[in-house]
Image (cartoon, rainbow, N blue to C red; front, side):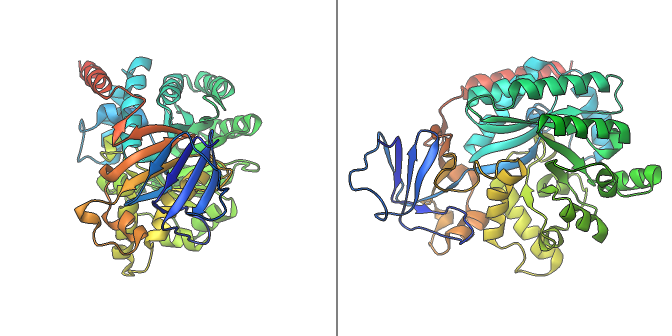
Length: 433
């Protein structure tokens, strides 16, 4: 018997063929998708399900993926806005981060997860401190995550932090029924010496986990790395031994043509964060050129302190619109490309290309159902265009991760929303004392 059958909706599997099934059907058994396709085709007549979700007037699609964030930074949302990145970091964020506790990170991460689930995000890549607290929150909430302990190579305890990060990966990789995977997170070229970066990369290779790093985010970073090492941040990374390593590189805003070639040659996965880059005036990444060179690009929100929300639908819309305007070409980043970046490409960036990001038999049942009965989604022409250019995250009705319903009717099923908001407010105020 099936566990869940979703019928009657417009199903967008995000496959290579660009299929849309209207009406379509999704069959789920346990944690996996058993069938995706047109309703009434290829199904045994005696198939029964423990539960049937009737999705008429709704869109059914893969769960969205947040390819780069610092979840617990919701604790700093609205605290320091309208500042230059280095001033924002050095004078505002880093002083508060020095006061963080594991408990504060746990509650901050839970709030971020609640926000992401309600916005249809079923998986995210996180780089932050107190990774055990992050992992505990992920395990309890039912979301999927690739967690990277943040590593600052210039800090006095950098060697200790790397050893602790290795221990974290050994303990948590594959935990929570496989929903938790781990990475190592050397922060950026300007905070990690060549020696420390090499140690981090070697450890990741030994552990068979990925690397999550910030790259080429600001002009200040470009100048600093070029002055110090004579090369761009991309070349700085690529001078290391990257063989058999999965690299997730956030931002990649300031790139030369040679940098784009290096990213493509080394199969580095880029995460575009348009909202954060705009807010911090970091610049606009050359997205069309990256895609044209064959670089896989996903979408991220960055932390809520520099965005100020965790909404991948919004990032998809921004990515589509910004690059049309910036390039003067209305055909760049069409809706289908933006949706792929928010789903399949995001999963691939997390190292989960065979796990989630598409609706396909044999993959994990991570999917969302979006309510089309909204004034801003009428009339009904192209469902992909409706998703990217018209839909809002508040239109997400149901969220399923690993075959389990975690949001239903726009309400969280696994988290105590009121308690989490209370605890986050309490911890945020303590940080200011």
